[in-house]
Length: 342
Image (cartoon, rainbow, N blue to C red; front, side, top):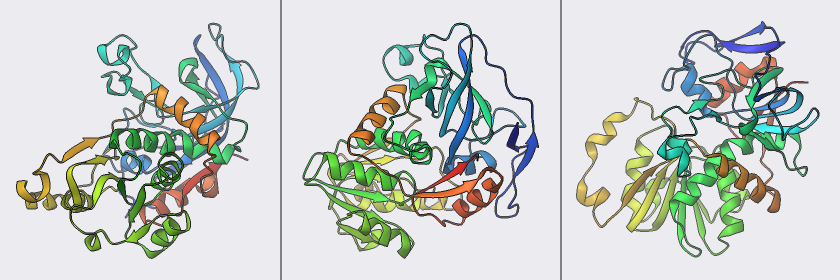
């Protein structure tokens, strides 16, 4: 099978081709796994974090990709709920211990044995992959392959971030950064909280324009926002400055949800500006998003089909994965990027 593999950590600013096309044997599913013929795979900012070492893979070489849509080609002997020909999705969760207090209480995303698709085991930048039956999700028929791919991570983690924000209808919510996840969150907010005003803070005018096209109440620079204006803010950027700016404009009792697997070190000096009275006083909260649960993925796919949420897609061939990743790094983003196997 053809696969794009990562052999080592590298800096995308100096290496525009971090992944190499390879021919590998088709994987063989274990008793509780299924073999998937991959149809499409979303390209996520987390792949940049893997490539550049902020959330380094467990081993090399590794096949990235954790927003996977495919057809079941074969099943292990213990698989009961899936059969050959089923269309399924695969998300960030590959496997968990299933026995710890977090797994048993519905907080499986915090399990210390959390195994991530495309980081700890091979993912979907390939023609085939394997996944445990328990981590495969039926795909709503309303979506095409390329439409559902970004919903499996960007959408699901955005759904979790929105739940954690505690937003109530009629309150103000801010979104810092406007990429694959945020443009789906905006659609969720408009559906579930119709009286809520959505403010989008993004660096590029193209992202701001896109936000307005999707129905943002206002889009622009976060520095132009009044203090004590936001009830909740969801930050999807890789930087620290939006965190500091967001805390300034939260209302008393407001909550900032940081939806990022890692923060870059380039502007870490921003944290030196932290002032208790300006940034945290009056019971302001900071909440991070750690992975997603299986329930998040299942609930979000149902909600996305109900609305329906149709992500903006930029489509690439498998062999163009490096182009998509480089554009992510350069912030050339409009919606979500998806690899199509062809």
